[in-house]
Image (tube, rainbow, N blue to C red; front, side, top):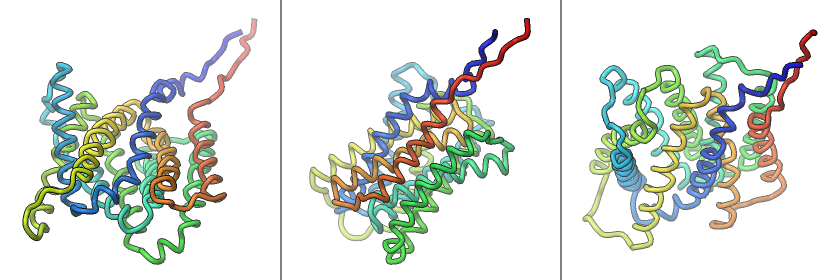
Length: 305
């Protein structure tokens, strides 16, 4: 008798600790956005956070003895992915979190796994097994439930709805660019350089749109921006790029579906955002979808004697 274990799922199980880290640091991050931007603009907030996170990641990589060199042949890929994901995502998601409840903004942004799975199938020919299809369907149902529950909010703030979706689509596009042509550098180096590439247009826009005299924000705002820069931005993105490098694009995207669940709970605690039966059902769907991908049972075959 020979046993064929679920070897296909081993990479996802190995990446599970990173998925947990990503879920916690990104999920609890969303309710902090409106608080961090009470005194500064979206562009200023993002300019500071992406620059700080990029420098921190490259410093960490250097202290670990990693080379910061990116082969010239892969620099275009790095820049394109950074513009698609980190520029569009950071600006669109921040504006969405201001215009609509932070938990709802997270839900829209994290439609990314659905776009990634569809694009990976249509453009890269990555096939989804029945189990993966069911996982995507359950995750999609969870997102649809939450979107339907917030329909009135979106009707009152259509720009927030549109920017939330744009963030998810841009994230998926940037991820697939990196999957199609991987950049052979460590995750810390990849995420650090992408942050600094993204910082160039974001800082330029912050300076161009800035009005009024320079001022020092309150220490609460400084502490929030520092935390967001170093933990969700730096550590979270390093974890994400590590996950994305180890897993297929559709599975990597699905590994993040629990983030809006944590964001919804955090938003309810911090801002008193609604958390009722619909939200809990949606969370159950998202958790079930991720569970299907992680806990794939071993298949057995009996060899003839």
